[in-house]
Image: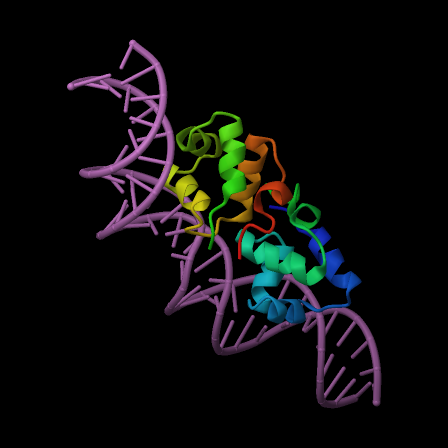
Length: 67
Length: 67
DNA sequence: ACAGTTTGTCAAGTATATTTTACATATTGA
DNA sequence: TCAATATGTAAAATATACTTGACAAACTGT
């Protein structure tokens, strides 16, 4: 499925660990890790929560990144 | 969870039935119906497929529409 | 008034997103 | 050199997205 490097970059730009992002959106660290590594296909509500936490939109982080 | 009226409107603008949209993105009609009625929370890959079929982006159809 | 299509919904099953626990490795700072 | 933090990964369990089949109500065109 391809890694989500845009997500990884947006998180890094805020100096935020996978752990912290996971806590901020109330999922496990493994879930964030799996999304970044393209291991699966998150729900749109989780994507929205991630975007809001990182100050980005769906199009910026999740458009053209999956298949 | 609130209805997704933007999706319903985008589909109507193309004069496309729930059935046809479902076939185009390879899910059941009930799944499209449930998404429009806010009965659940689709995966982002399904959202992307719907957007591409309807000529819209994620931000246009799924941003600020869920919670 | 009737046939065909569209939509809403429900119940039972299957596929998969997500959790929990756990372990290994790499990196950073004291 | 050591402790702490960050990341990658795996297996078993749970929650929920999605399917299939089915029925009813609303709308459309004839």
